[in-house]
Amino acid sequence: MADIKDPENTILIELEHGQVVIELLPDVAPQHCARMKELARSGAYDGVVFHRVIDGFMAQTGDVQFGNQNKDFEIRRAGTGSSDLPDVPAEFSSLPHDRGTLGAARSQNPNSANSQFFINFSDNHFLNNQYTVYGRVLSGMEAVDKITRGEPAQYPDCMISVKVAADA
Image 1: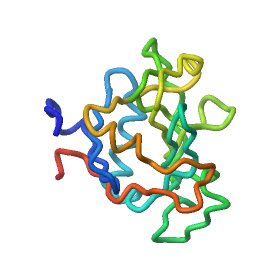
Image 2: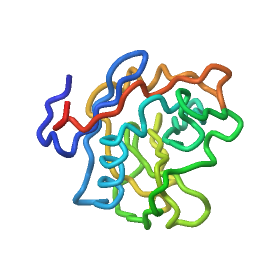
Image 3: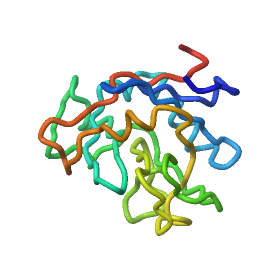
């Protein structure tokens, strides 16, 4: 496991193929980090599928409204929902969308991020200054690389559990 320096700003995602440890970057995107921790602490991310996984690009998840395979699951609508909380405004920075970074998924409106996020499989610098980067994978990228591809996959992988390391 990764060396966790700040448990309050570290997310632990349990996947079928192993644990992913994510360092949040509250100094760069405080509102996005706070939202992820709030949803993790409420259990909202537990059981949510990866509804859009594109080889060589990214794995997207976080639709707590339609993407939870344990509650009101609608694979055809997964990716169109959000949480009951208000949207989070863009927090663009100079951090690049490199392999293993966490980005906020949103609609065409830059201020529409809510609960969905993606993990970059590759350096995706064409996303720079267009999507908020608010975390990076410290360990477990090999588990991310094994997520089933598809938009959506016939049998999508899910986040078994998502916790703030300080609470684990």
